Length: 296
Image (cartoon, rainbow, N blue to C red):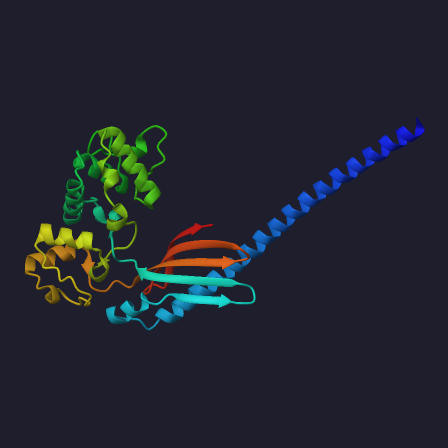
C-alpha cells in the first residue's frame, strides 16, 4: 500500500516537473523569438539608415535627365556573407503618374484643374464607368476642404461611420474607399476595372514625360493629338515632340515636364531567415524622404 502511494506521489511529481519543463521551454522559445525580432528590427533600421545615406550621397551631383536615367537603372546592394544579411534598394522615377490630389488647384477658391479633370474623365469613359460625373465629384469633394457637395452623396466625410476626411487623398487605401463608395451609390463596379496604379500617385506636383507608361501616352495621343515617339530616347524639351502652342499649354497645365528629380525607392531586407520591405519617396532637390510604407 505504502509502495503504491509512493509510486503515485512519484508519478505526480514527474508530471509536475514535466509540465514545469514544458512551460519553461515555451517561455524560453517565446523569449528567444522576441529577442530575434528585436535584433532583426534593430539591424533593419540601421541598414535602412545606411542605405538612405548612400542614396543622398549618390544623388548629390545629379542635375539633369541623362544622369537621372542612369541612376534608376542601378539597384543598390549591400550584403554580408558571414551573417547572410542582404539589402537591395531598387530605384525608379516617382514622376511617372499623375498626382490625383492635383485635381484641385492650390488657390483660395479651390478651383478644379480642368485639363487634369478632363483626362481622368476620359479614363473613366474608356473603362465604361456609368456615372463618371459622380465618381469625379466624390474624388473632388474628398480632395477639397469644404463641405459643399458637387453631387448628391459625394461628400463622404460627412456620412455616418465614414473613415474618409476632407483635404486630400493620402494613399491607395483611402482611394479604395472612394471606389467602394462610388460602386455602392452608382451600383456600378466598372471603376474597379481601371488600372489606377498605372495612372495615379498621391504626391508630387509634376509628372516626368520620360517615365509615364504607354497607357498615359495613348491617352495623350488620342485626346490631345500628341505625336508620341515610341522609342527609348530621352525627351528634353517641347520641340522634341513637335508640340504646337496649344499642346505646350496642355502639357504645362497637366504638370508634364522632362526632368522631375524624385525617386520611388523600394528597399528589401533579408536577415536571420526574416525579411522586410519598405517603400518611400526621395526628393533629390529637397533631400527629403516622404510617403514611407513598411511591409513586414
